[in-house]
Image (cartoon, rainbow, N blue to C red):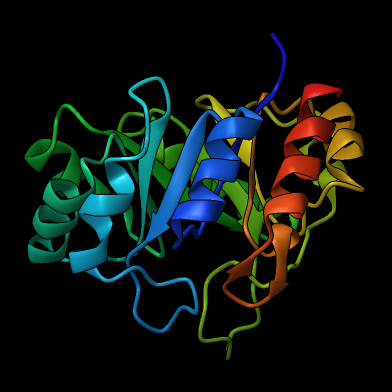
Length: 213
């Protein structure tokens, strides 16, 4: 199966349309106010309405409470919840509350031992997202253009289907797919001209590189 891609942190009609036109399988809306990619709830419905049903609307959260999840799911008609810094017990509670929505817990990776954090999520998740671990003092858990050593995935027995994120761009995503066997990749800062400012040409180039991988 050819690899597909999620374009994350979309906040404008033009960049969302570029992701759709380029063949993204998923589009990501960030609901985390400290992020430069944060999407206000009152802006989410108009963007979500532009997304055809074949493309999965993904909400990106950092250890969210139920009120935020309820509001974001309703506003953006989310099909997937991407959960950063969310403990397995909390993911289990979200699974119970939203049984029809796909869950993607995020495992932050710097060393091979970090991958073991994926195992408790196996009964709860449709996919597990491997992302680069950000510095402890960083305000954001992702979207900082960092990548981890893809060789850490060599020989790792994945407990669930998974996707790859962290420092990807049009210039290296083909290599990343070839090196890891990822069938779904996720990009945010790699298609930006500045934090939170997506570029339609970069989005098109990234999605073309994924198609050619």
